[in-house]
Length: 396
Image 1 (cartoon, rainbow, N blue to C red):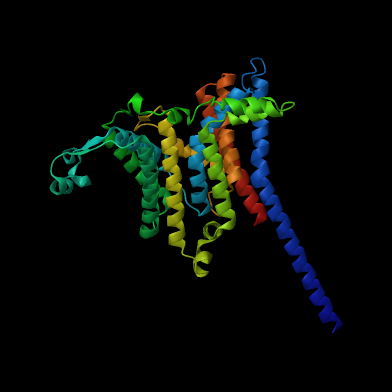
Image 2 (cartoon, rainbow, N blue to C red):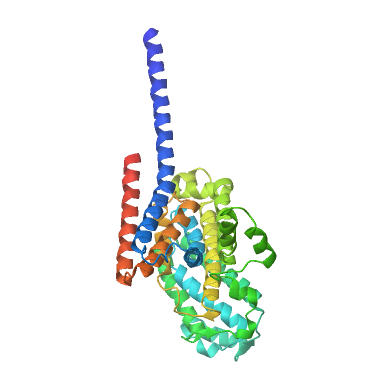
């Protein structure tokens, strides 16, 4: 009896020790996912502050507002990519989706003529000609409506990706590699392989200020903040000058982080990415979860397209955002997201986006050529993935 009691006590102690070890590993994993990229960001900022110490232009408030604006488009698309990578997927069509949205918004704002004769028969041109006959004129819509429809178009593109992946059972890499070319081709066909411009008169003031580097504060508020003691007032005034697009990104980040932490979709997304087979056995609707995730990511990519349209001054450019998908994926991976799925944090993604923006901006101020920037970013991406693999191996 004594021997049996000792065995039970030993087993309980072992189980307790394993539980404590798992908790420690979980805490260290979270610390690595969030604190690792943050430490990297701080080191990069210090490096460029030292490299540009003679001019001092890098550490100015104006330059940091510029960095924030430069982060909006990549950051908005990266929020969607975070969701996709959590469920174990990837989306290579983000850049083409952004280009298609810019062209669509410009065409809708200007009005356009749909001519079936310009559409090849292989893409349904004959069928469209039989259905509608000759050219059809589509009237212009107000710019806000055109921008909203651009976001919806992004969501439809995301649903198309998700539907093909779940229905055909093809890996996301191959599906989105194909749709990347499809969306880019549609953008070029819709724009006639040229840029589409909207009239200056149709651009309201809020449109021009959406991604303004130096957004102005209301005069009364600026005066009130200036009366605050010490540096507090000046700091708040600088924060208040952030572009509205930056605030939109921050609000979306809070919403996505809340969804991932507290909603069923968020918890189920982590479950699917961690072990899809187990998630199926537990009764989760894996295709539905993936479809929802790709749809949300598409909406965010559509919003990134609208932001790109604004950044270009109201231009629909079918060649814009080439390579954007690589920047977006890099930001998520640098921020602690795993290509294997089941991992990713919004905060880490935002830090990854900032690292990319600081590298680009700081390299310009330090006089580093573009090839050097590409080499540095490539090394950082490989290092981030390698460290992620090493961490998984140690935990396994």
